[in-house]
Structure formats: structure tokens, C-alpha cells
Image (cartoon, rainbow, N blue to C red; front, side, top):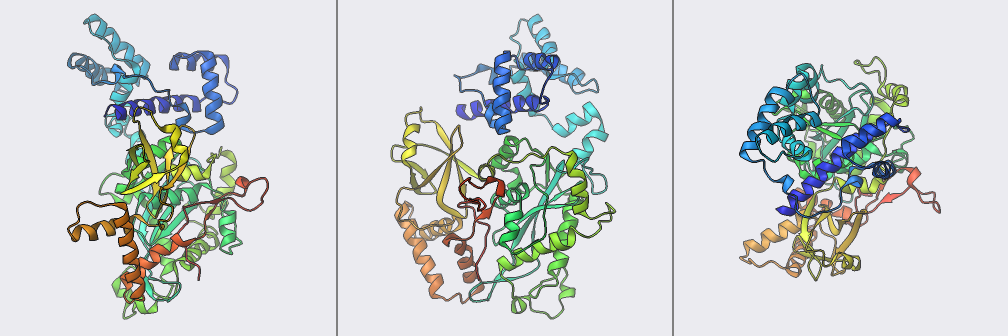
Length: 538
């Protein structure tokens, strides 16, 4: 618990530093330099050291303070101090006077000293303010006109001044059944995760999967949004341009569990993306992405195997019998619909095509790109925290080891953050100060398995009454279950679907990143290992 509090404190401090440094121009004047020095309470040398580090990497975590001993300043406020803080909050801070955090702290400190109490630090007050209802606080400080576009956006009222200001993300079940690439038998309806730029109505990117909505789907969709898509399109034989790319300033999402995951919130803060949620029970507030999803579903209704949105429209058609398209073919079909039709049509709200709006307006925007697209993707993946044992890391009843873990030994049993891709547990990523360390199962003979397979094996073993689960038993159970599926020759749709969910582990194509990130020796586009978009070769 103490480690968690310390980590949260360090992370909050890094975010404050990033917000302040991000506002400095390329060549700040002396008055601006002195203002920041006073606000951060640091020396001139420290300011320029932080500024250099931040501009080289452009990630919040580069400004994390060094670990220190326990900080009493992060303890809960005492009751007497809390009365003073809440009084100044109601009468001063949460008003249209909008005082700065520094002024708020000075007023609180004055009353605390007069009462013989130890005043709270500015960081401590900042953390206290973060726990407040931010929508209500903005309304009280700036009025409903400022808060509602952010926290209560409606389809007709949500406005983004420029490209990449607001990107909306959502999932939907696609209204079409896809087939197995080998047997051409139906395996079910996939899930589409889609993103739209509110200002230009450009589709920023998408991800198609047989899994349900998840944090992994969001991570892959966002990675597709921010990268240059030239190589990705070429790999699918599409010769049309898809120019939208870059890190958004705000991501607007619904209240799905994956969007409230701590890993997602932390990754957004890491890349200085503001996360805004729609009010619960108000799907109308996601109007832009909902309309784009409707447009895409209208297009797939032309495909054999469509379920249509309304059962009356389906008539006597049997989607399972009519299905002909594989997941890979459906992905290409959707990409063609986006770049060849939707982007090129005149949008009623813009009076010009989305691609024309993007090309005309993006020149006035400073586009932020991830310095490392692979690391960007990993940042958004789910994670677990574990303590490094003498024999390695134990995660999901699998023991992981790498010789590079040795240098982490003996660090006061510090808990490590471990990122993982639920589709492939054959490699996990341990967060270090400099990046991520790839770690694989200690037994390299283990097959690649997905999280759903591991959980299914555990359920099967528990059903047999085996309480003590071990790694050998789990892997042997998974192999036995796979054999049963194969022997059944995919006789049922459920079995075909399970086989298809596994297939991407056997060497599926990688995500193509920007040509700019290709190595100097090789002009081929850089490929991202272990995180293949779910694809099947026919």
C-alpha cells in the first residue's frame, strides 16, 4: 500500500511538471523561465535539464521524480486542517475568481499558521483537489458553458477547434458473420473498435477482432490511429491515401470497463491525452462515432452473411449459410469503405469531404507522433504488478525468466509493472525506467497460448477438483483441449471459433508501422512483434 501511495505521488508530480513544461514555447523568454522556476520551485539548471529530457521523448514519465523515503506530506489531511482547506475551497477556489493552486495554498497556509497547525504542501493540496468532482469544479469555476462541452457533450454541441483536438472511440458488434479461412465455415460475428476525429470527421483508425470489447482492442485501435498507414494499406493492396495520424489531445469514450481500466488512464496521462467520459446512460453524447459506426454497418449490409440491424430487414435470409468473407477480407473491405468511399464523400456537417477537411486544416496543427510506436502500444496494454522472486516472475501460473532480470534483483522486493497481451502470453513486458524488458516463459518449449485458453484450462482443472494448479498441468490441459478441437474437425461453430482465435498465434502478419521508423540498413517498414492484428491468410 505504501508503494502504491508513493507511486501515485510521483506520477501526480510528473503530470504537473509535464503540464507546465508543455506550455513553454521553443525559445522561452526570461520572464517565462523565471515564472516556471518559481512555480516548480527548482533551479535554472534543473529546468533546462528537465526541458531537454521532456522534448526529446515527449512522455510524462520522463519527468518522474527519483524515489525517496516515506513522505508524510501524502498522508490524509488532519481534521483541523481539513476544515480550513474545505472552507477556502468553497469560498475561494471553487468560485469564478479562479485562483491558482499556489494562491489557494498560501491562503490555507496563512490560516493554518495562525491556528498553530502545520500547513499542507502544494502537492498535498493538489492531490486533494484531484479527488473532487472535476465536472462540478469546472462548472463552478468557469460556468456550464465551459464544462458541458467537455463533460456533457451532445452530438450537436461537441465542437473540436482543430484536427486531433477530440477523438471519439467506441466498439460495436459487426452485423455480418465471417468464415474460417480454411473450411469457409461460419465462425461468428467480429467486434469493430473504431475512432473518429471530431473536427474533420476523419476515421482515425480501427481494429477488428473475434474477441469482445477489451483494453487490448483499444490499444491496437489507438496505435492504428497514431501511425502513418501507408505500409498498412500497401500490405492489403489498397492504393488510396489515408493521411490521418497523430496523438490526439482528448479521447472521448463511454463508460465501458476497458476505458476505466487503470492501465488505460495511466497510458493516456503518459502521452498527455486528456480522457473524457460520456455521462452514464446517455449514448447520444457519442453522436459522431455512433454515426460513423452506422455508416460502416450500412456498408456491411451489402455483404453476404449480413444480419442487418433489424430482423424484419433480414427476411428469410440465413446469415450463417450466406457467409463468405474471412476476417482478413472483412478488414480490407472496411478499409476500402473508409478511404475509398466515406473519406471522399461530402460530409453534410462539413460541406466538403473529410479527407479534404483534414488536408486543409492539419497544416495549422502541431502533430505529435509517438517517438516509439511499439512502446506506445505496450503502454496501453493491461498490466499486473508482481515482486521478482529468485526464480523469476510468476504470472498467470506461468514462470517467466530473462537473464536481464538479474540486475533488478535485491531492490527491496520492489513490485514490478508487467504489461501483457491477452492474445499471446508467450512474451510479457517488464517496465523499467528506460523502457520495457521482454521476458518469456522460463521453459522455452511451452507453446504460445492466449489468456482465454489459460482460463479455460484452469476452469477445467477446478471442475475436476484439483485445487493446486501448476504450470505443467495448465499447459498439458491446453494441448489436450486443442487436440479435441482439431479432432472434431471444427464440427460446430464454437469449435471453429476457438480454432480461429488461436490461429493468429502461429505467425500472423505484424502491424506495419511508419516507414520513417524503418532501420537504416533496411527500407522495409518496421514491424511490431507479438501484437499482430488478428488476421488469417487464405
